[in-house]
Every structure is written in structure tokens, then in C-alpha cells.
Image (cartoon, rainbow, N blue to C red):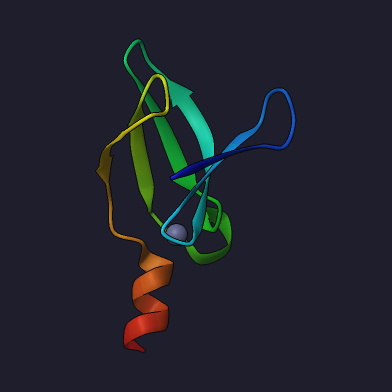
Length: 70
Ligand SMILES: [Zn+2]
């Protein structure tokens, strides 16, 4: 997991070769959505803790399964 800061407001997260864009922040967690969400209808989401030090959960990357299985 790697945090990429491109500007003050838009943080990005690189994980397993995919890039996620910061979406919502709660008290304890941050939700990141796949950067290919719009382009490929990917529903990949990563949830990290608020300090961005560990990943709490991930969902399957749709764009990943497309490229690996079809
Ligand atoms: Zn994706």
C-alpha cells in the first residue's frame, strides 16, 4: 500500500497495482474507490484505517477479473 499525494485535496492509494481515489472519511476509516470505476464499472473499494497505515477490507476488482479471465 502506498499513498500518493497529487494535490492537497486529492489523495490516491496504490495497492496491488491499482490506484484508488479517496472518497469518504469517517471517524475511524477512509474509503477509497478504484480509479477505473467510471471507465470500467469497477466496484473495487479499499477501506483503510484513518491513519492510512493498514487495510481493513478490499472488494474484488472487476477490471482485474476481466483482464485475467477473459
Ligand atoms: Zn478496479
